[in-house]
Length: 469
RNA sequence: GGCGGGGUAGCCAAGUGGUAAGGCAGGGCUCUGCAAAAGCCCCAUUUCGUCGGUUCGAUUCCGACCCUCGCCUCCA
Image (cartoon, rainbow, N blue to C red):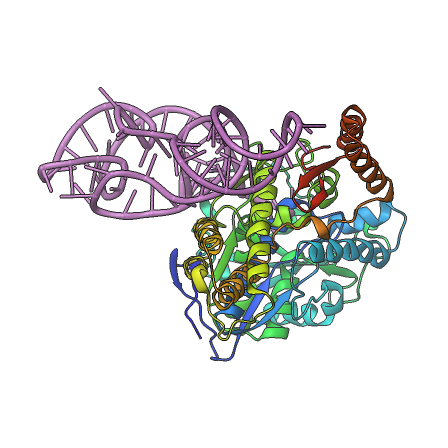
């Protein structure tokens, strides 16, 4: 297969991504906590992970992609209680929503999507192993990881535990006194009244797993004790991934992860999204503004994944217009190719875009190369291009768009409400009768409904107006 | 306080020791009942946060400084 290079958080270098067994890439990604709708920042991580999978496959590799669902933790328990639902029903509802949104964004289904609650026995077994080897201790019904027992702790995040700012979190946990050291983290949480019906029996009594534990248990169970690639949002580097390493390596005695892959945050108005700032958007908000999931996917891939990306509606509009342009070029190639198929599976003029993706997922460079190639191909096509050549370029374009997972924008793909269709037809009738005032009035009415009518040589067509709330 | 990102045209965003990709927006023209769309063209040449240094030459290397964002045990 072709080489794919990717930045590794642990060594801070771009290095070739490899499958340790020479077979499939064992890739574990930290998935969502299903207690509410995922926001577009959450989806940045998942879209980038999806891109990596697509690039790996396009390069000729195989991949086992595991992305977990956190369906038991403080937030899910609280959410279920407030919704007066059983935990399982509550989390399933949000899981369905996540799947629906993910599908709209073109996320490929991972090979496996394990839920934390499905792996409780494995998690308990892992904790027992750590207690036996002295890496963990029970205290007040909970079990904690003894950080000082693991010399490599803090290596991934380059954070010396001693340098943690005093009370930086501002949230002293009630049972903090139960720990030997502040840095120790909980593996198993003893049952508390507010957990209600949510508990499992364990050697330490009723309780539930700590957050970091599930990923270690599921990754090692499904993919093996050493995995090739582990990814997630940049905020997971510490403490989540640091703790995963500590748990896993202390238990197995083997290197847990060969290559770390972290995606920077999506910012809105140059700030991290948060409910308190009121700048948190979901796919629903995107749809309300007349955009499609593909527009968002393009925006999420517009910047490099290791760079913070600032989201704005201006960028969304740029994405929409960009996709429209790609759609025109694509339609032209389809017409000129006239049904011919490319004899060989190459990239045509789109090779540079592919090369950019293989080098640490350089999407900004890839988009530049894609637009440049599209413009050149289109110019050549209009100056006279043979069907064979058009077919070849079309194949290359489809291929690169497939890897990016972003199709061009075609007006025909959008459903037009009957009322809007009627207005457009009435306007056309008025135009035929040269009743310009009436036709302009109808056009304004269409605009109010969020639609734009475009007259062309072949007649009019309707386009959803973007950017209208 | 510790650690880590950023500062490139109105906005987003590449890039390189030898003189700034691409997209959006904007401007002009063509087309059009008008407009939109589309097509053609233009759009950073005392300039790449600031100040020094190295160099024949730096936005690109080194140093200092300023601003900004994130993480520091809920967090994609």
